[in-house]
Image (cartoon, rainbow, N blue to C red):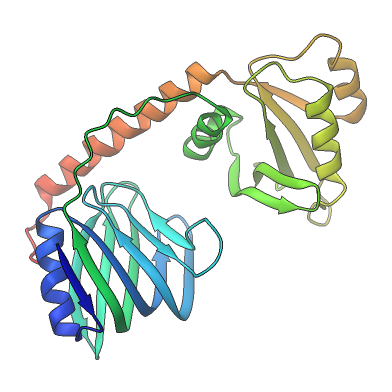
Length: 263
């Protein structure tokens, strides 16, 4: 374990390189900018942030507020580091789909490296979160052409599970239930719709995603023009497992073809 307080960029890069090569966990507090390129693109200006790099190749960047990272990359990334123009650059490259997260730091307040030991078994209690993750990973589970824009989108009554647009540019609002969806799900979705508007000339499509519908709820849904898309927990878990295996296979192939680089 190494702990550095206010290290210089050269010292920080040296310890960072050692830790990444050894697949250790790294935490840093630094003044940085963050940019992402891949399916879309984003940039975040300078600010003091918590950066976490894990041994499995995932990276998270947190602000000093909110529980969700402001940017992140999943496991399987390849890390590259260098000093350029008085800044320490950390680049996390995900080979498939090709995505790059670049963190540029001009001042590091804290850096620590850990070799964490955790052999505990993870017991999954399936929930709506797995269904949500499956939809985020494979939007075609709902319909072809669906593009996810946001999830857990905050609106006055609560949080929209999945928010996106369809192939025609219509706004899609999805409420997920792991059990047969009933009147409560319909009421919840209707409340969300009061605070959401479509693009000009388009419409809002409310959709309930669940294994099935409770008895007697379909007429109400038809009256409110709420669609139903069936999705089971089992199908969601199978989708996530398939996606994980595909990512691992793509990473192995990419590493086999890529020239070796040292941090």
